[in-house]
Image 1 (cartoon, helix red, strand yellow):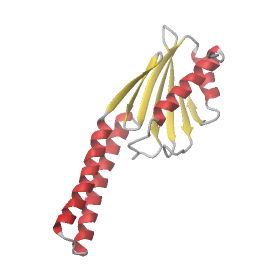
Image 2 (cartoon, helix red, strand yellow):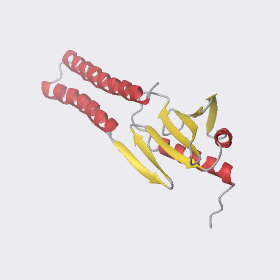
Image 3 (cartoon, one colour):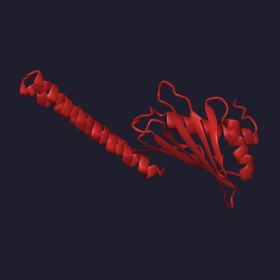
Image 4 (spheres, helix red, strand yellow):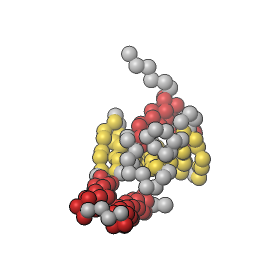
Length: 180
């Protein structure tokens, strides 16, 4: 699935959710003979929440982290890192990094797919890693998205996962980093 296709699908879910919720609230309010002021407030609250979620979904945030930048939009994060190592060494480092919180579920050539278990921030994440050879070394491109396609917020989990993955890869390639 293309990244834009998932973004469009999420937008459709947001609109469908807010319209269905507004209609359901209007129906309940009509059947219970609530005053029209309360009915209008309930319907506008549901529609407003959907509109707000749709606006937040479009917000794109870029955060610098060392040698790379992580770009996040609506619980989807991506970053690229260039390392001076062979593609096979980098793929081995990704396999090594897949222990612990990540699980390697698929590997096809230069594409590796890892899953992150559910936690308090998300229902689980899918991390796709692309390892390509360049003239300067090997480029690692990581794209993480929630397993539940309607997730709007990941509370920074995607960014943290990519930082953790890149740190584990660099540690595997260069050895542990000792901090003072």
